[in-house]
Image 1 (cartoon, rainbow, N blue to C red):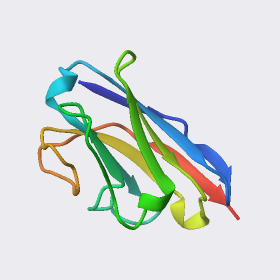
Image 2: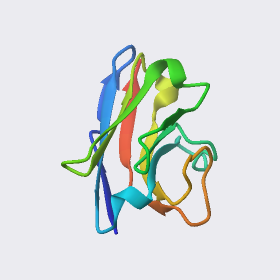
Image 3: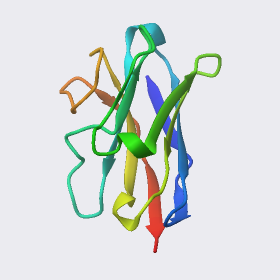
Length: 124
C-alpha cells in the first residue's frame, strides 16, 4: 500500500492550494480516502478535512472548512485531489491523505493507513 501526497509548498494568503494523493497497492473500490492536517507544534487533527468514498463516490466535508474545500478523484490515475481556497496562515500545516475502510471518514481511525504528508505554508 502506498499513498503519496504532493502539491504542497508556499502559498500566499487568499490564494488556493491543490493537493494530490497518488494511491497504489490496494483495491480502491473497497476504501475511502480522507484528508487530514497537522499544524506546526500540534497533533494531527482528529477531525478530517474531507473524504471521498470509492465505493459510491460520496463525499464529506468538515463543516468548518466546507465552504472552502473541494475533493475529487481521478479513477484512471488512482489520484485524489483536495482543493482549499481563500487560505490563511492558519491553514499552514502538513496535509495527509489516509486510506480507510470506513465509508465516511469524519475522524481519524485506528486502522487508517497514512501517507507521509505534504507541507503547506501560507504566508501573510
